[in-house]
Length: 157
Image 1: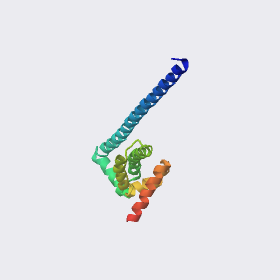
Image 2: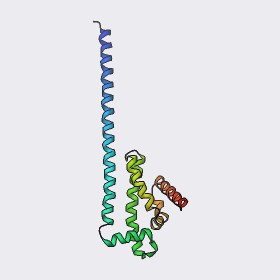
Image 3: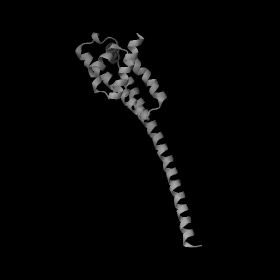
Image 4: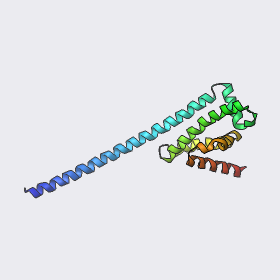
């Protein structure tokens, strides 16, 4: 066997090794991406569950949030400010989920279920007031999504 033949065999072996390595890396990246999607979704849903626990923690908190959502005029200024903090926590979690969904980390079926909640929340006068007063602090894409929800809600009524 001459040196040219050995060189050709070496190139073939090297090419096969590169292809095998690229295949292995592709599988690893896919598995990491799946893990990140699951972790992201789990963390966001856990945050929403914790917020729901807080909303139901005492009759006073539950009453404040529901009155603030459906009849914000019935709240004192201090109550409204407390309700704003609760609403902000809820809306920021939804914003995070929206952004993670946009980046492919939250599956469509999970996002759609939460988007239905978002539609209901943003149909209430208190959350609409929150959006008009504080919505400019949201991510522009999420703010646009919410504005579309409001427009659809106004057309339905």
